[in-house]
Image (tube, rainbow, N blue to C red; front, side, top):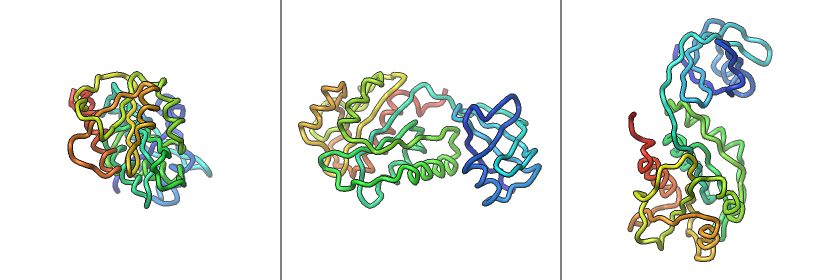
Length: 239
């Protein structure tokens, strides 16, 4: 049987024991039909894979014993992607690829040119969870609640540096991104940003950067921007 991957909170681990509950417990027992003695890989967003064996299955939780721990990934940069809300669920693609790249958090927002107004954060987090499992990530990216562009500007002080992709920026490329502990990247919706919105973000501390001379779809811009930023900071390199 294939050894499946499950995510838990760090507080669910005590010594060599893991308690699995909630949706991940239901997926293990109701969907995958796990039994006592089955093996699983447990992840707690710390870059460690824990090979475990199921020792107890109760009504609403399972207990697993850790048999082996392996450090498979380390992060020195925390990247948050602020992505303009897209129509026709196109943001799903950006979320999936951001998870694969190792982005820590994805936050959708509305602005002048967003055509969509509704966003299901629970559905988006399920997409992120599935993407993390499919690509074998040791980290689970979080998808935040829908915000306005003003909300985004008000949060930029929480980062060491923030960058916004802007089509009228012709000189400053992603190669200018400096390695910092906490970084933010802002990608606009279909139609991009107007000058007033860019000034709002710049006044809040954002630095405008260019994605190059070619026009990218908004969902593509999110993926390319994240990849360029993580590459520029060395986060895609082997140690």
